[in-house]
Amino acid sequence: MSDGPTGSNGAEAASANLRETAKWLVGGVVATSAGVFAGSSLTRLGSLDSPEDVPRLLITLTGALVGFAALGLIMEYAIAVLRVDRLSLRQLAEAGDKEGDLVATRTRIEDLFRGRLVGKTTSLAEMTARIDAAVETHEDAASKALLADAKTRLPQIMGMAQFVHVRRRFDALVSRLRWTSVLAILGFGVFAWGANPPERPPAARPPLLVVNPR
Image 1: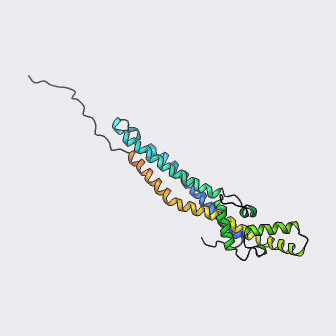
Image 2: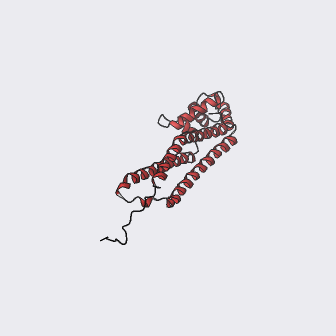
Image 3: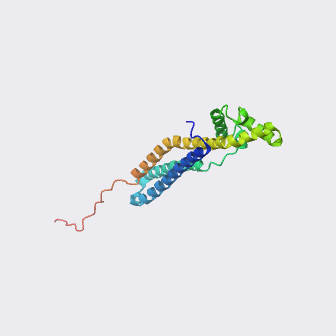
């Protein structure tokens, strides 16, 4: 992952761009689903009505289920990008091992801002504790200097944290698209094959008139 945009405004704009791209992907999934349903009227699925057609019908339905399951996964991953809530400093600093995304974001931010965190601290947890202590004893010169430093640096730090968090979700979406797209193509390909069986030759009709030679 690159360092990303600099400045809080640049980070917010980059996050918004990633969300817009995810919205486009969601719209594409919906359009694809609608197209498949609309195109189903052009299939010959209704002709699979004889006992020997049962295996082909099962294969057809399995292909449709696989295709729509893949589209559902794409939708889920895209919505995960859109649902990223705004992060808080305390949320990042106190994230535990079970919150893998937040821990990864915190680690990345501590690496990006090494030597540039508020009060020359080395971690977000230490920085949060120092800010809390400065708020409690805000009258002395050291606390005032720390709070002034926090007012200057925190917007950039948290803006970048938000971008990194959204970027992680977006990268996961792109990575999963590689196999979910193939799965959708295979599923709908099987559906298209199964729903369009070859036409049966017309059944032989008995002659209308039989002449018995004498």
